[in-house]
Figure 1: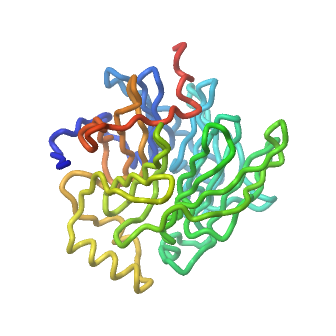
Figure 2: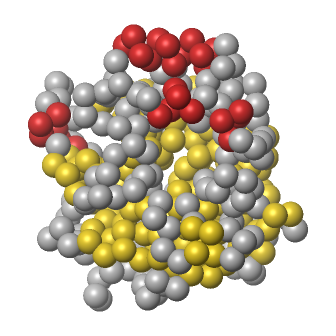
Amino acid sequence: MSFEFNNISWRGDALVRPECVLATAAGYLYVSDFRGGVTEIAADGTQTFFGGQHVEGIGLLKPNGIALLENGDFLIAHLGDSQGGIFRISREGHCSTYISEVDGVAMEPSNFIYLDYQGRLWITVSTTITPRADAYRKDIGDGYIAVIENGVARKVADGLGYTNEVYVDPDGEHLYVNATFSRELIRFDISADSDYQNNQLTNPQVIANFPAGTFPDGLTRDQEGNFWVTSIVSNRIIKVTPDGEQQVVLQDNDAQHMDWVEEAFQAGQMGRPHLDDIKSECLKSTSSLAFSGPRLSIINLGCLLDQKIPSLDSRLLLAQGAAGCAPAHWHFDDNR
């Protein structure tokens, strides 16, 4: 199907690097906001900002991934220049440290925090290299995944090629992760005891290897079992079947510019200019995807370089549309 960008509607205004977007059944969107917190966007367009406090020894937080908790608080992954950590922000704007170490070592700049249906919290750190741009290479694999148990974080997978968003199936048996610069979607088996403690990730399997121009970042799944992957720089949305077959359902990029980016990547010379100076018609480095609406058929796109959230009906991309799997936080706003 051909797609006209004028069919996109927009949610939010004056957002600062809304990299991660979450949606709830009550019609709210929550986006990470580099002003040091989370912005709530109600169905009527009303915006409320939570956070903005300076943290001792860190300064203003730089939220990348975010998670919504059942009591309405947020957990944010702090993507500092040299420091990371997971921080908790209340609806009153109070900020506190939630996790600052993994395996007893200070956490590096932190990419993502994810709540699954079993109540487990998963963290990704893309790289331990500073500055992070030095790890925009296919031959570097020092990203890791950690799990939080009893207030302590520990690594459960390591040696990954720039770990980004994760997704856990509702039954809690498998975890999937995008590795941005090794260009892989990887599945792990999850083993845990009866209380969902002592979690381990085992048996890694590559579900999909992505081609030139794709740098997988955001990750979710639909009710048919397909993965939905977003690519920064090339502004691609890719539908991936369980056996790894890929279909680009939307993209917005300049071919000559992408050749320049790809040449730099293959030469091990990719850097911030290749991420920050993209050329496109409408989308500005699509980084995450959340399904919303009564049928979970509306696509909302987080991004690195815009001040608002693109929103579109999935039927504009596929004749049959798509319905996302409800995330663990889907009903947390029901009683508001």
